[in-house]
Image 1 (cartoon, rainbow, N blue to C red):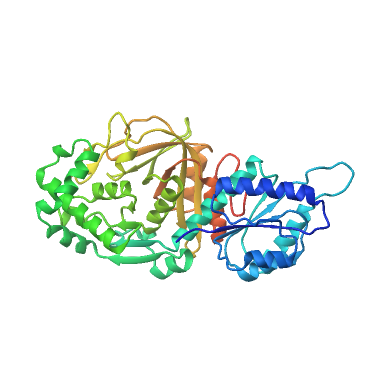
Image 2: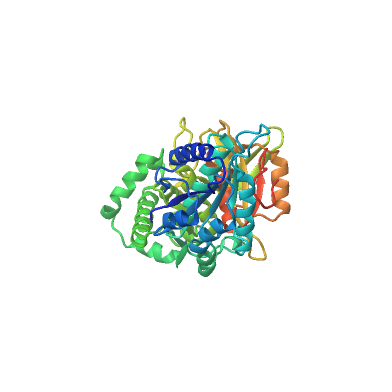
Length: 457
C-alpha cells in the first residue's frame, strides 16, 4: 500500500501575500526534502473553492495543515469532513514584529483549526511551530511522517502467534480482534507442534541451503552436534516456508519447553535468523513484544534487540538487557561475530551467545498493555557502549540519558512487562507521535521530554 501525504497551505487574501508566498515556497521545498512524494498544491489555497478543488480525488494517510495566514474554521472543517487520517497542524512564526502590519496571523489560525479538531470528536493531532527551516519544525515533520507511515503499514501487517505463552507469561497474549481494532493488524495463530511436525518431515537435502545460510551468518555452528545442526536447519525451513506462504511480517513464537522436550533442538537461532531476514520474531510467545520489534525495525530499517532487563548500574546509568539465546546475527560485536553456543539453562544448542556491538544512539521501546486493557508506550533514549558479553546468552548494555535507576524503579512501579526492545538510533519523537495518533499514554524517559500529550518522565 503506497503512502500518501498531503500539504494543505490555507489562508485568506487580506494578509501580506508576498510574505505568505515566500513561506509557501520554502515550506514546499522543506516538505519535499522529507517526503519527495508529498502532494503539494501549485498555489496557495486562499479560498474554500481552491481548497475543495485541490482535495478532490485525494485519499491521504497524513495531512500537513498549515496556516499561511489566518483562516477560519471552515477550512479545517472541509478537511475533516473528507478525511479521517493523522493531522500535523503547522503554525508559522510571525516573520516581522516592527509595530507595523500583521503579515500572517498564523497563530490565531492555528487556534481556530485546533478548536475545530476538538469539535470533531476530539481528533488527535500533532502540532509544530516555526519557520520552514527551523530544526524543530523539520524534526517534527520527519517524526510525524515516520509515525504516519508506520500507522499506515500496520493496516497491511499480518502477525502470527506460534503456540501459547508459557505459564506466568500471560502479558504476551493478544486477541486477534483487539489487534485488528486497535492497530489494524491481522493476527493468525498456529500451534508450535504444527511447525515441529513440518520440520520433522523434511529431508537433509531439502534443508541443506538453510544449514549453509546459518553457517555463513554465525561463528561456531560446526561445534554443535550434527543432529542439532540438522534439526535447526529443518526448523529454519519450516518457519521460513510458513512465513513466506502466509505473508507474515512479525511473529511471536513459543520456545520453551516444547522445542527442548518435543523436538530436542531450540528455536532460538531460527528466530535470530528470521530477524536478520526482516521478520520481527519474538520468543516466549510475546505478541506485543513482536509488534514492538516490528515498529522498531520500521524506524531503523535494521534488526532490533529483544530481551529482559537483568542488571542495573547506577554509576554509569546503564541497564543490561539479555535473553537466553536469541538475537539477530547482525547485532553481534564485530570482534567476536555471532557466536553459537548452548542454551544457558537447558544446555542444548544451537543458541546465540554473544554481546552486541556498540552504537552511539539507541531507543528502548515497549508497547505496554495495562490491566484495564488500554495501551501505553514505554520510550527511553541513550547509547550502547562498547561492552563484552555480560552473561551466557545474548546481551546489550544501554547507557540511558535519564538516570537508569529512575527508569527501572518507575517502570517496575508502573507495572510494565519484562520484555523490551532496543532500537538503533533515536526515535523517541516518532514513537511519541505514533502513540498520540492512537491516543495512547506515553511514558517517556529522556532529558527533554517536553512535547506531546500523555505522562512523560
